[in-house]
Length: 130
Image (tube, rainbow, N blue to C red; front, top):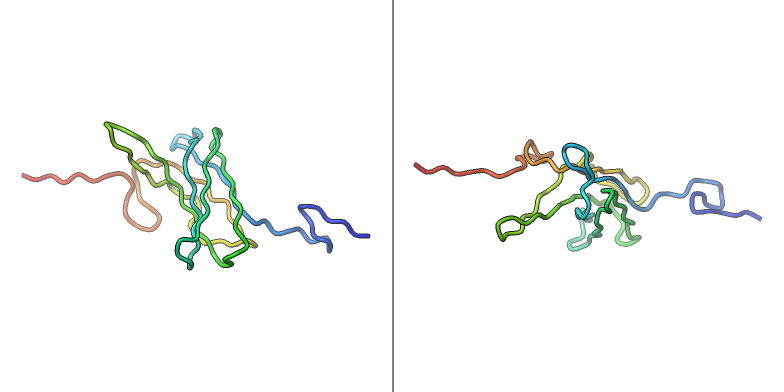
């Protein structure tokens, strides 16, 4: 009789991980609780998984079995100031697509300024008119 566990199948082969996990921090390394992580399918429109960082800044999310294919991850945090709510994109440690059998561990950092991985910059610009 052969038994299996969550980490092995009946052949003794490690079971594939079917999700991702990581940590979200500020630029100085403090946890960023409440930040949203969105996993988006690279082909199918409106196919996504959303999760929220815990008080320690950690998150995890399981990828659904369907649709199969590749996914990407992004994270955002919202902050309110002067009666407005602002959404800030967080900097990923990895930008490669992943799937159920080849997951990645993207950590995210709130960088208020600097270059974005796909081009452009974090932060805002100011238009000056003379």
